Amino acid sequence: MSDENNSGSADEVTRDFIREIVHGDVNSGKVASVVTRFPPEPNGYLHMGHAKSICLNFGVAAEVGGRCNLRFDDTNPVKEEHEYIESIQEDVRWLGFDWGAHMYFASDNFDQLYEWAEHLISQGKAYVDDLSAEDMREYRGTLTAPGKESPFRGRSVEENLDLFRRMKAGEFDSGARALRAKIDMASGNINMRDPVIYRILNAEHPRTGDAWHIYPSYDFAHGQSDAIEGVTHSICTLEFEDHRPLYDWFIENLPVPSTPHQYEFARLNMTYTVLSKRKLMQLVTDGHVSGWNDPRMPTLSGMRRRGIPPEAIRDFAGRIGVTKSDGVIEYAYLESCIRDFLNKKAERRMAVLRPLKVVIENYPEGQTEELDAINNPEDEGAGVRKIPFSRELYIERDDFMEDPPKKFFRLGPGREVRLRYAYFVTCTDFVKDDTGEVVELRCTYDPETRGGNAPDGRKVKATMHWVSADHAVDAEVRLYDHLFREEAPGSTSDNFLDDLNPESLKVLTNCKLEPALAETAAGAPAVQFERLGYFCADPDSTPDAPVFNRTATLRDAWVKAKAKVKG
Ligand code: ATP
Ligand code: MG
Image 1 (cartoon, protein in one colour):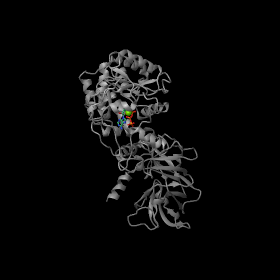
Image 2 (cartoon, protein in one colour):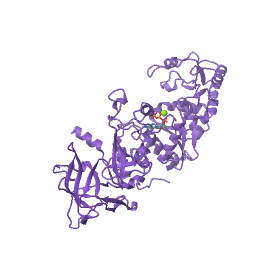
Image 3 (cartoon, rainbow, N blue to C red):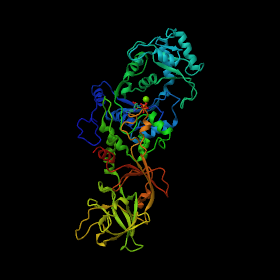
Image 4 (cartoon, rainbow, N blue to C red):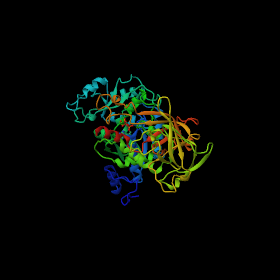
């Protein structure tokens, strides 16, 4: 399907430069069938940055009737684990993409890669180097100074083959030798200064076990794996731009079955968070968060647990687009995508987070009635549900003031408000405890206003949410704020951990939920707690003690707070 004439559906993605190239290659007939891939290294959980890459790779392939492979670049056995391989698949699927039968591993190609390494040796284009890692670094030179040739660079093909085979056989200690491509130690591009293509690592690999004592470098495995898979457009982030000449060199010097082309785009950076597996790993291992799926984490598993819908992430990825220059996206922009989606889709419920007891004095004791509540005013199809009303209720503590100023329109002594879907009530009195805190309101209700409208046409200035005390479900509610208090964590000190927000998690207990929420399972779509925000059930919930996470506030409190400080 050509999207040329698309009339601006919500899902429409603007034509970025990558899409221009891919669509152009299809239209010109240069490429018959487009193949892209998403190539994670299984050494951590996927984050928002990966989501941008996933949406791009799977998205563009789908637009032109091509396919996108999921490929694990698993060349470093020391840091890679099955747990990550599993979580990556789960996260990509959750985000809404399907690789069909096309899941691959760089480790599937270890035999072929080894053969190609021998091929380079036999062509005089690779050699075994005995320099220590430290010496090798020194010989490498700098951005301004050329490198120096290793004294082992002149080894004969026979000697190189013999040593390389013995490396493979496990005759040497880890790191004792390395196989290097013989390119140009004086190249202006450091990546071309005889890069290491195989290293000795006497380590077990999650998939190949102890079969190998040598492992290909990421740079040697990556492009060749693309070629083996028939990847036509090898899309990656800008930091690999300088590696492209090396990848092209391998492709030119090896009998590969196809020639992928690499295109680079700017990685995603966001305010108030970090998008680096290394840093996210540190947050987990140092216990600053409860795990990779802590709802404050920018990981896909954290965001899923937080109740963020995959549709909102895909929408965000489409809206921020794909460019060639690095930038930082406001976290608030993601939140606005989340709110846009949830406002339309989330069912409404009533919950009171900081309860204050209300007794309706003229309502018969022991009586309960069922009132109709609209599930989603944005979606008629969502229907209505029943909510119980009775003599004792909870309202939000913030919705009452003993001595309200003029602009406070909610409840105060002598004031009348509407209880949503129920009645008009008037506060007649309040009860304080020993410390002077108001602990209970006494009110009367007007039976004529059932459903929330007065037949005499009188108006009230506030409509408040409430929960029937006898029917309420007690819950724990976890409120989240930015994980970091600085826009760019680590910018004011060297350590990004210094910028952790000590108030990123606030736990409220004894919250009161309407009964329908007792059945909300963990993993179910987020709902809107009226007037409070979007919330979802957390997997920590038990049948007797539900736990809810705040997915997002209704408005951006952070921007408001900052504006206040500035103003
Ligand atoms: P990190 O920097 O978090 O450690 P990485 O680049 O090492 O990530 P990989 O597993 O190699 O992680 O990434 C898989 C793919 O996702 C790569 O193609 C990479 O370019 C892309 N990717 C990683 N981070 C981002 C990001 N912030 N924005 C866009 N794409 C990203
Ligand atoms: Mg990487």
